Length: 406
Image (cartoon, rainbow, N blue to C red; front, side, top):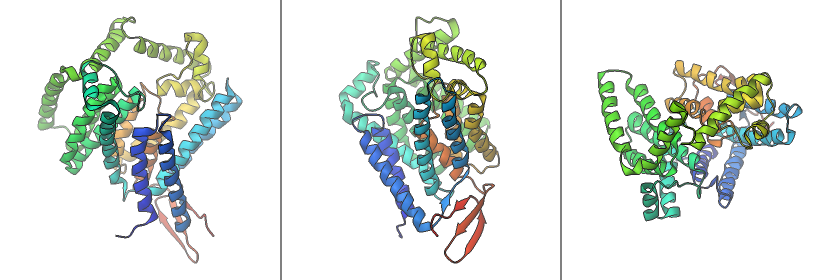
């Protein structure tokens, strides 16, 4: 089998996903993730020079436009240094997405769910190594949240949920039933994380997988009834006692206004309410990139992000920033209706839209990776490809290519 730089890129990307899961949010191990990304980026550049062309699909233009808007928000931001730092972060993500779009297309996109399922399996094994097998399971039974030594608890849980959905997709769409072991292992990780959003993402993702595969019929309805019964029984085991207790406290706040029960949910609701008020004060351009934390500090006495992607965008970027960011989703969903978007990537993008109510994804690496993969997977994109060779020029439809070597 011939080894090309593109195949090397694919392997390095898969490696990057796995080390990102394990090492990206720990100050002591972050350097491993950086080294692997640097290798991926260098390999991408070499392959571009060899191919004598660069692919600029819609991801580059749409996300690039959002980065540009964040950059110019420096001029009206309350704290311009924060807007500048966020712009630099977004620019780095643009580079990451650019490397992804040079590596993947419709022909090799099917390997992506394998990478994320395997990354989840490694996360489970790494968790056992960090916490010890006995302490890991004892902590779950005792409702002690884990994940801080590896990542952040909610991100730790969310990444596990994404990996479970990837494994479910491979089981039902590709008949790779061995991945059921990944699902079972990562349920323990989600229980350990205590993440409410992660526990909700898994059944939603499962439902979407089943509906996309089989549609709605009597057998599917019966399957869902049995699944609900099984889920209720599973969630009443000691394994999920901690996260279920956190969900119960959240519901008490949402349904009965009992704010003493759950400070986390109460604070998030305050962020949403005050965020809406702030948005209507400056609805067009907002307060500048990453400036929510500055505006909210004197109001609620805490300087932090909004924990809600919709509020974060509306406050920081106004309606313009909000529309620039979510226009990419609009394009991908339109392509999904014409069955051009890869189904696994469609599932993940839907889950991000749901998760955005409880997290901020606009500067998330994993979000940008999936967004760029979504555009890379499109069949027959409405762009034009120009392949420039030394002695001849050949045109074909699918993307925009620009020569980088004469």
